[in-house]
Image 1 (tube, helix red, strand yellow):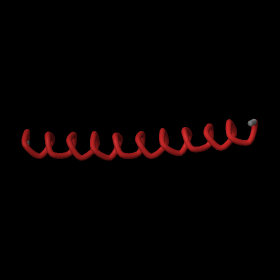
Image 2 (cartoon, one colour):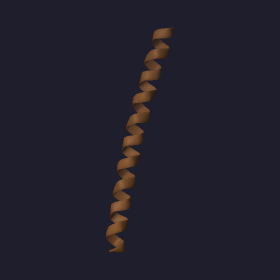
Image 3 (spheres, one colour):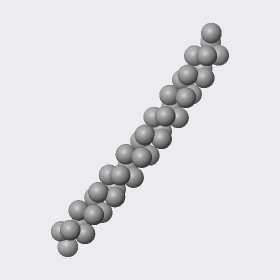
Image 4 (tube, rainbow, N blue to C red):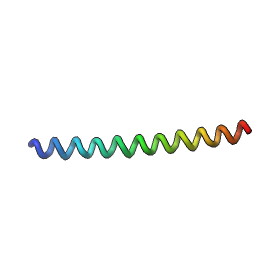
Length: 39
């Protein structure tokens, strides 16, 4: 049971890391396009 919990926790951490990376890349892309529009 502890092994399942450990694997689940690691999977959750990986998912969160991927989501954070995706969101940050989208935010930076949007910010860059907004800056281009302002110029």
